[in-house]
Image 1 (cartoon, one colour):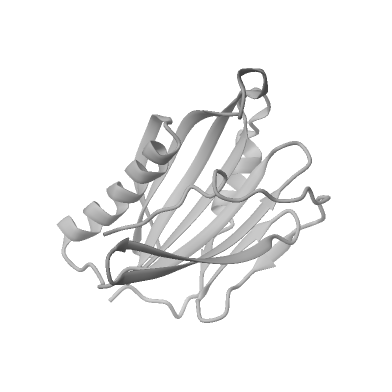
Image 2: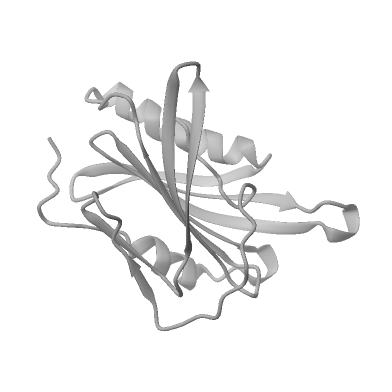
Length: 183
């Protein structure tokens, strides 16, 4: 079962000032992604199905203006090889991200990076503990499947201050080492 985390709801982070950028290249991966500043690094273990423990690696940065950058990844139990399996993993990741936030999916598009399949999508949701704290959010996200590892990137901002250029810059910063080939 594919687990995709929309981490803004799970993680409350301290504000950090922006810098010229911080490149993340997690050990054991052949990818990199850039954020405006150094993110907090977390690990969570989930058991979506009894006996099936998944370790999720999370890099999350919340800026002072309530803009969040989240990069996470986890390994699927098996490498999906059939087109229908790959489609199921990617479409499931999109669906779970939106459903977990009670969001409204606005657009989803398939894409590939160096032959690795993915989905690019946007959705809106509302967050707040009380009615007077409620804030409308817009999320620009991508999920990319490389072998059995599912990567996800989320740019989350208040809808009124959503910066499409900043979101694109973050999502486009995901890079794969030239040695990482699609089987």
